[in-house]
Structures are given as C-alpha cells and as structure tokens.
Image (cartoon, rainbow over all chains, first blue to last red; front, side):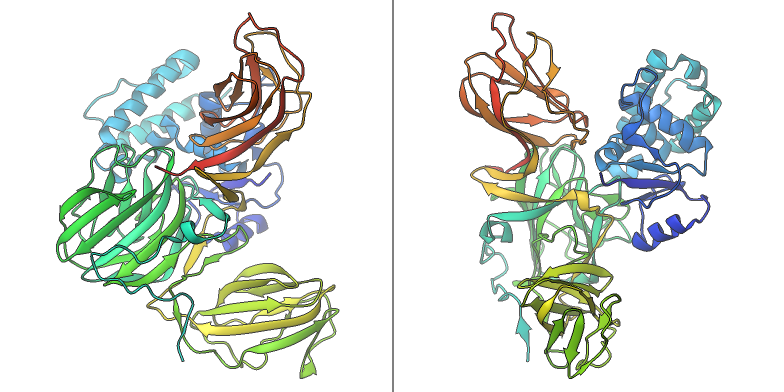
Length: 164
Length: 430
C-alpha cells in the first residue's frame, strides 16, 4: 500500500526526512507543527495508522483513532506516522483536529464560528461518552472563546491525559 | 516558426467555447486525480495567467460536498473560484476581496459538473452544467491565477478533471489534467511553442550503448546524456517530446521525472537547464527527441503533493466514469444467517475507501431472495435476480464488503451472488 507520512517540524533531520523534503518541497503543514508528506520513505518503527488495533484486535477508527493520534502528536516530536490517504482525510476532518488547527474563518468563509461551535460540542460529547478522564480539561463552549484559546485548550486537554 | 499543439480556439468573448472540453472528445478512458486537502495537493503554473479585460474559465469537477477550490492565487485568497460546502459557487473575478455567489445547492453533490465563470466588461456570469446560476456585475480589475485546486492556504478536496482558461476569446490554458501518476507536470494543450531548440535528433540505443555520431558510453548502468546536437539546454522551460521505436524499454530522466518508455511509445516532459538522460539494458532501437521552448504566456503546470494512489484510470460508461477494479469475485460467495451482515468470503482486504465517494457494485444474483450488500458503512438492497448494478456512497474508510439476507423469510442460498465487481464511480450531472 502507498502510505503518506507525518513528521514533527522539529524531528531529527534524518536521511529519510531529507529525502522526503527533496521529493515534496512544499509538504502540507496545517497546524504549524507537523509536516504531512504525500509519500513515505523506509524508516525505523513508523506508526502505521491503518494498522492500529485496540486491545481486542479491532482496527482503531473514528474518535478512538483521533484521540490516540492526538496524544502522540502532542507529546512525541520524534514519532513518525504512516497513513493511507483515506485515513488521513478521516483524521483531517475530525473536530479535534480542526480546533487544534484554529483556521476556521480562513477556510469556511464566515461559516467558521458555526463550525467551531459544532466542533467544540462534538468533542465535549466525545469526551463525556468515551474519555471521562479528560472532562475536567474541557470547559463549556463560550461565544467569547477565540480560536487560539480553543487551540490551547485542546492541546492542554490532550497533554493532561496523554498517559494511558 | 511557431508550432501549435492544439489550434487556438478563436471564439468571441461572450460566445460559447468552440469545442467541447477535453473530457468529451477524448478516448474512452482517462486519468482522474483526487486532490487531497489533507496533503495540500495542487498544481502550480510555471508563470501566472494574468487576465485583464474579458476572460472565461471552465472546469470539470466532481463535487463531493466538501469545499472545492477550482483555481486561485497561492499568495493571497483572491482571484479564485470555488464550490463551498453548501453547493454554491463562490467567485472573485479579480485580485480584490469582492465575491459573487450562486445560490446554495447550485452544484449537485457526488456528480461531475461543468462549472464556468466568465467576465465581459463588468458583466459576470456563472454557469453550472449549461444553466446560468449567476448573472450580474463583477469587478473588472486584474485577475492573476497561478494555482489549480488551491487558493491561498486552502486546498481542494475533490477530483478536478479539466481546466480551461480563455483570455479575450483566445484559449491560453487547456489542461485536461489527464496525466498518469508518473507525471510530475501537466502539459498545457493550448501552448504556442517556440521553435525547435537546436535540431531534432534521432539516436540509436543498442543494448544500452548509445550511438549518435560517436558512441558516448558503453555503460548500461548509469544514465547517459544523449542531448548531443542541442548544446547546453536553456534555463527556460522546454517541452521535451521523446518517441521510440524498436524493442525493449528505456528509462529517461528529465525535469526531475523518471519515466520508463516502452519501445513504440512516447512521453512528454518539461525540463530546463538540465540535460535529458537515458539508460536501458534491453532496448534496441531509435529514440527521437525534440525540444521546444514554452513561452511564459502559455505556461505548463507542476504537480505538488499528489501521491500515485490518488491518480487512477477511469473508463467512460453511459452515465459517468468507472474506476479500476477494486474487487472481483467469480462465484461461490458464501452466505450467512439472515439479518446479520457477514463478510463475503474472499473479501479479507484492507483497502481503504474514499469517504464520501460513490462506488458501483455490479454482478449477478442467482435467486429472487432479497439481500443487502454493505460496503464502507452503508448498504444497498439487491432485490431481483439477474444482473444488477447498485451505487453506494461511502461513509467509512473501512474497505470490507459484507452482505446479508434482508429478511428472515428468505432462506440464504450459497453462491447466490456471483461475479461481484466493485469500482469507484464518478457520475456525470444530467
């Protein structure tokens, strides 16, 4: 399978990363912190997103996958991810990722606030249903909340609950 | 002497384009690329199209309900056209931040649509599938377009299949976007090329040894420069056309692109400032090569962040385009208990599906038992016996086909579904 790859912008400049930067001189960088390359180069111990399974052997998808990814993205600058494009698209469209990117108005032409509120409430429900340990880190939505504040909150919520 | 790839389409501003777009006149198969917003996939012109006065841009795009940028400017979000998630067309006719919009739901979801914007004086029109959906005043300033499927930091998330740019009645940009996954550039079919750069050259490569005048090298391992007769290549971009006769294959390197050309085939690429290199161990025959300058007024496009897996070959059918076979099962597909979705025997694949895309399942059903085929999070009933063809819109990337009897009344029958085929499907808007 053809995989894409994700590196932290401060990841060690390995030969593999150099090769990717030469191959893709303008990689995606949606959050200011991670490069997303349109291909992968063999490296040691990549985290293959399409093959992640839970303790029962079921493939990780949806919220569980997004939450797992978020914990690593927020805490480990040396992690290298591989993913198929559909998996990347799935994660790219997740509410928590959009809050972290904090680029609502730019991309949605004035619909940004509506989308931001919807995303905030979605993550709130996701935490209540499946990640109660993070509930204390997630304040209620407020119209006065800025996108940058939302970005900071989602990061602190993930980092506070990264263990386990 | 001026060489022309395609005849420029001399049409008057305000009239219809003289010919149908490329997708309508080309062969029965073509490449489609799914530009990915997650990967920032886009194409960039070698020089921007600078449009003053009257102009017209037409695109063929598969809109899947997510924001889809057709073209724009990479430096700032102006001079752009996009389809918003509500199905409206949003157009900025010049470099300033003034938009006009068509009504919501103008562009049908999960269909291939032709979207056209045009400016004559200050009169602007937006047309979708030949229906005018906006007509009114638009800004008349300078419009600079330098990217496809992108504007500023926003990227498309859909298939774009053709883009045509007409300036004062002259076609200056004709991009079928029909290049295969190995191509790093997209040729402008409206390009008015310069003269042959040096002489066209015909070379003979025999078992890896290049012969043109003198033998350059007997090596069959490394790349060899056969751009003799051209002198140093110009720094300006040149369109390189290479064709071969004989037998075997040869690998060509130019413009950052590696291509394998089978004898009897040809390839086009863009280069500039670097020589064109070849190597081959089993090739015997002639290599003809010509290089012609690409003027800035008719630029080519370079592809960025488009993995090979997102460019796929599609074949035309009566109502759209069908992709390559994803799964094909001959017969004896196992059955299951009623009302419980069970994986079809032999479908233990892990191929992710494109969420939001339509897939067409077809095959034969041997009995009248009603069954449901489930794929990527959705299911579709398959009721009659005989040949069937059903479309599913995918909501989950999980690529596992399942099916069930839809009622406990019907007794499952082994081998009921045969010749099951699943392909990606792009339906043309009616």
